Image 1: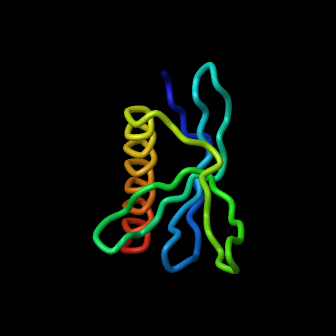
Image 2: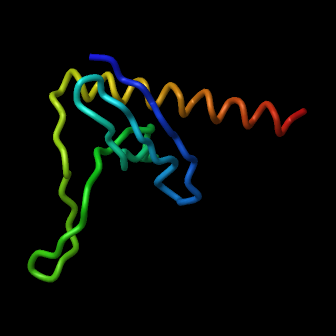
Length: 94
């Protein structure tokens, strides 16, 4: 299945670094994939929404991907994010 990144926008947030919109061939467009800065590395989170349970705010994924497909989606988004950051760092040093 072909995965195409339609949009990847950098976000000014301590942990959320970017938001992605992707196109999955034969499926459609999926918006709201987040690039998150974890304690040790970057990772992606599928689109999600919040809800309250017992007075606590929790999060639930709107869509769940098959594991192999999700790994490919993450790799593609994180690679593009790395390229985007590298380009900005190069432009700032020139």
